Length: 298
Image (cartoon, rainbow, N blue to C red):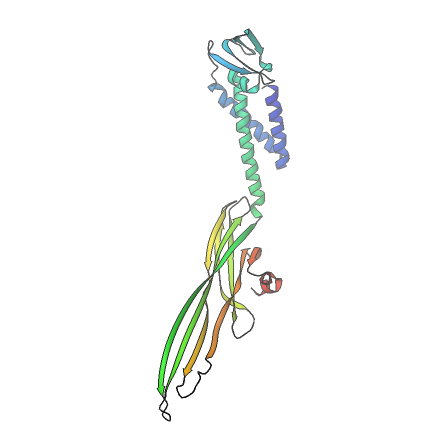
């Protein structure tokens, strides 16, 4: 093995041992490197004498010429400047890998060992993080409103005056649904399964505190370092406004209409991302819902 390859291998093994805190990993890498080198070496084919080649020197200069000589330790070419001969240790490692079987096998074995080291490291990290559960959510919301209007007329005759009394009843219904787009992100290096729970709140028109109007949950699995989107639509909140207008021909003015309202209106939401009983993240339409007092209620 040449000096650069030896230094790289020693550095690789030392770094791996420090990363894993397990000396046996360095031994594994050394054995792996040797096996790869032995496997690759027989496939080496040197360029043929008489072919044109470009060589790169250690300092980076390039020389192009006809290959005239190739031994185990030097190469000779015929260039415009004449016959040039270079020792193996004067050549850049990329050129050595093209010309000498030992350097060729070393370069490929080193690269394969680097990949193998990264795989070992990833496996170790996954093992160490296997008991970790991290996740986050982002929520975008919109309120969908629908309106409906109905009118009904009722005519009755006043037996005393003979006038016809017309009563017009107008009913306006406003229906709201809360629509949420929730993105769950798994921030670990392993697949994990979370519980996504959501709560929608409503307030009665007659007054009073907001209460849970609709709630549900879903178990969602997210692959390592991936994101999953889940859409949620609340049950509707409806407000009914009723207007009763009476028309009396016997009087000179129209009485004021009687207006009544009933129902409940949308008051926001909370979305929780949980692993078991642990809340990993929470998003809400109002910071009030994220207080300990509110979360304890849920």
